[in-house]
Length: 173
Image (cartoon, rainbow, N blue to C red; front, side, top):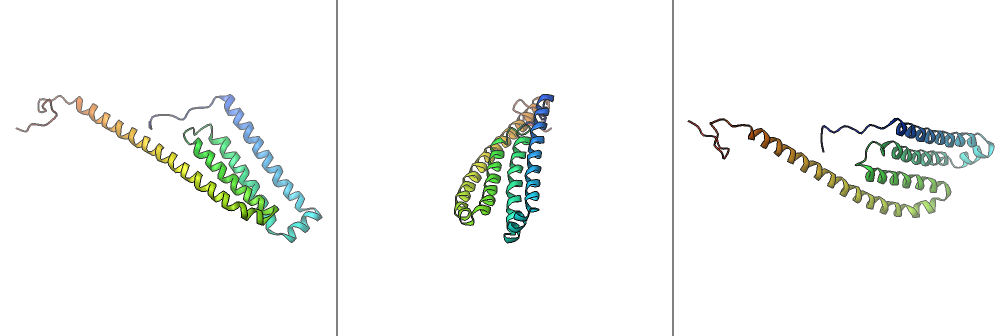
């Protein structure tokens, strides 16, 4: 990885597009959260949330996790190209947590039955992310070592004093 490489700058059109997407995400997030609050303040919603107090927590958690994954995907995909597969994995994991939380609202039995499937998905995604990070780390370390060796060779090739032989060994007098 080149330490002198700069982060690619976005054009004003790309920035405007990302800003519009983020505006849409936050707009929908706040509409969903306000809808939950509005429903809670109705007589039917108050009765439902009184009978099932964990229902509002699960609903808000599912909504926030879903929008967090969407927000991460929108903002980071334009800046971090190397981590796009890992970002996709994070979005899938957030979506799985949101779906478990949403299923807890509908039927706890279905949620607990689908939980092992999501654990298996998590294991596969964790393995994939580990392999991807391992490959990226190996390539970064090998590039760094190659650059260090090249810079060392370049620094030693300029050393042409008479105290050194052609083989690079120093003679002492």
